[in-house]
Image (cartoon, rainbow, N blue to C red; front, side, top):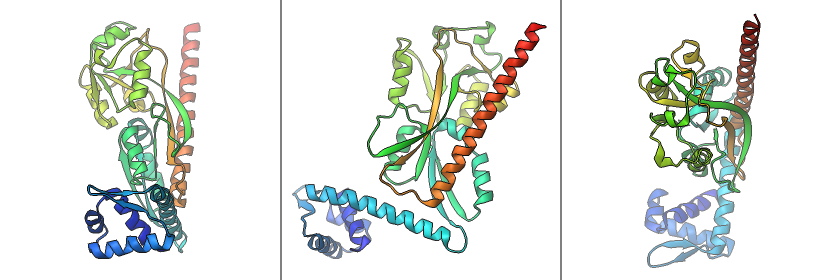
Amino acid sequence: MESRKLQHMLALAAEGSFARAAERSHLSQSAFSRSIQALEKELDLVLFERTPKAVLLTSSGRVVARHAQNLLSDTRAFMRDVDLLKGGEYGEISFGLSSFPSGILLPSLLTQFMETHPKISVRTYVAGADQLLRQLQAEQIDFFVADVRGLRQQADFTTRWLDKEDAGFFVRPDHPLCAQPTTTVSALLQYHLALPSIPTMLEERAWNKLGLSAQEYVKLICDDVTILKRIAQNSDACLFSTEFVLREELALGQLRPLHVVDLPPMNVHFGIVRMRARSIALVSNLLEQMIVDKMALLCSTSRQKKTDGEVGRTRKASR
């Protein structure tokens, strides 16, 4: 069976029209129709139902389409691995990150990857977990890294969990809320909350703990962590983030954490998300393992610095 016939089938299933699917496949409508007819004859199945409004998959067609999608995905992964193994490593990979992982991993991850795998092209996307999942399902990316606890779990994707990171709110040193050593949630909510896109379920779960609704506070949403940092440094916005994402700004005294006494402990828990039935290309495996190793190292270093700091403060207090 020729893979192009399966590609034509999936194009027709997506477009619902012979004319549009033929145009998408760069074929005349008659040639495209012959390809679909040849596939149906080869399988001895009726794959499409022709209705006045659209061309729809039959129940048999839906089963074949699901297997065709997996088969073509496996073929693409196979060809990328063949490229890598041909006397010199090269290929292409696309992956996504939500705001916090991008702030932690980029650009050091890409710098290291380019140095160790100079012939591999890399394309990155930074967006919220909901959008990244849609890109993954559409095969626009190979995997993504995000906090996906708030996504509705689906049978078609799998998650490889990484370390958790403590999270909280951060402001510029001369912020009005810094006038006192502690503050409250009600005081915090008098200001814009600057944060990246968060899955709706996760956001609702967090604020339900406080008996609040989304209408009771003002948000400023942006998935570019660099812009979020600048906003927090130059306004009264309260930035939701992790200490590790802000390590440079905290060290330079450009931002400081808020101690919100009635805010329950919060954290982010990143995971690497893939489609369950999709083959994992060698090039994708290389980058994924590098992410796992780098996150483990960074989190370990962060925890050690925090422990050293606590020990130092204890010794100073004991004097």
